[in-house]
Length: 245
Image (cartoon, rainbow, N blue to C red; front, top):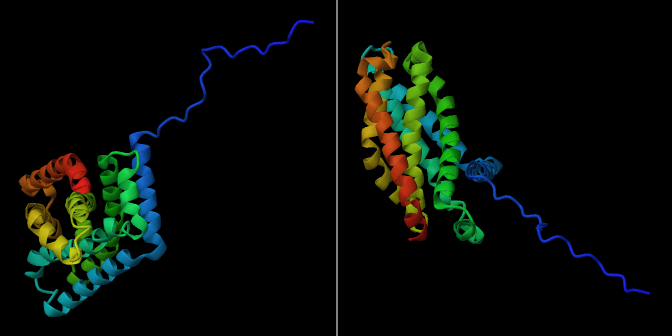
């Protein structure tokens, strides 16, 4: 009797391989991870929200919100509050990865630094925006500011201004994560860089509070949009050096 042989599998049949997630899928994974980590404790969000409401309340007693002059600086006050409150959220962005060497694991993971930066920046953006959207009605009540008169213009300024705070804060959060006094160093590095964006956001908000549209000072809108584009591109280009260094 002839020996029975097992036919070899055709050479064209290859073992199944798992497709690598797309860039935006990887970004979404980082976003979901950071949001879950923050929403589990709510430390940064609660601290930022309490700070924003407390400062708005205290300044409403320090100034007379019924005076017409209040509308001239209320927009500036609003963005100062947003900048300080945002720092409380941004400071935890990379610091929460320090226990159990999670940051080293993220850096060693098969993802680019740009993906890690985008994921964390977008997660921070959502958290900071949530704090601002809660504080904005409080600002309107205390200062008699009709920010909703040009609602979509206000949302545009809020979106662009918040991204400016977020992109600068996230890259400097990565830079200062291993510094012992990172809570002090992050604001010192972030605020000087944010001056152009904050000036543009303040001026646009003052116009909106006084019933004008963003088209009144279109140059400030261009400054804010250009700031976002330039610093986002620079952060994406430099994040690998910042993380590895």
